[in-house]
Image (cartoon, rainbow, N blue to C red; front, top):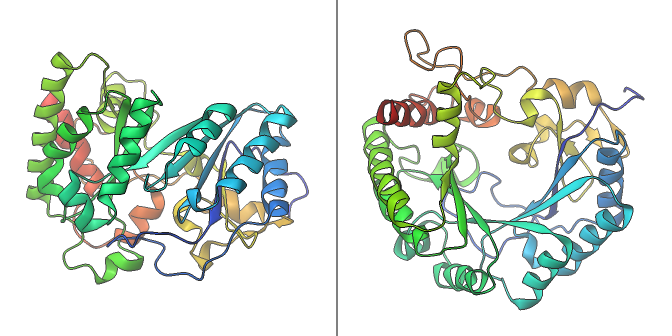
Length: 338
């Protein structure tokens, strides 16, 4: 194992494996509840800070807001050390309260929420919709900027336009990103989890129509990550297929037990473990997805040679299960805006 660690620019801390919801397609499956000890978090942060370069810390799980005290301890550690780090939390929003909001403000923690559709759809695929939307309302009243991530599956693909309309009701929502379902964990038992190509094209076109209309009506723009990525690619400014920090060998995700893997989606994958925070297998950590590029019907596509790419872990899990959902999303967006 190398004694000279490479830069870690994106650090995912799974503060807990526990979750208060049971999403139909959760890629991590069922796990025994574990909470990250502070020494594990500290060791991981020291690794990320070692290069002296700016880095991002993503507080995730499970549901990280089940451990509010740990969120504050980790954030305080980062800020008191003076490291050049950004902090963010990814939450289902069901446990948001004034104390959490005050903590996030105090330490400059950005907020990401998981919302897959209007309340009826959210309840069907995730549960806890009422609490999630109450959390969103509390964030809106507190004027806390939020970015939303939506898992796209057969359960919500026909409701993507409604998703956009629902999010537009909250002026503090600054952006939305789509994550196609990963065929792993509970999704394996979900009937027809991965949406068909025609259904996905239709859902994306409806979402585009609503997004374009909202752009003329909404005072605060709501960015759409995949649309922006396609626009960047069409402008010639995108590096082919470099989807994330894992594709550059610059990310590390940490399980509460201290094991490390290349990214957040692999935290519960024993085959991707690359040592621990005390003894990292840098060659495996960096090499698992470094240079990974999306594969698809690229020849003749208008995005050939400049495609924004796809999550390598998702590509691996969904291989052989039809066309890449992200490929369909990019092509549908590109055809719409060209």
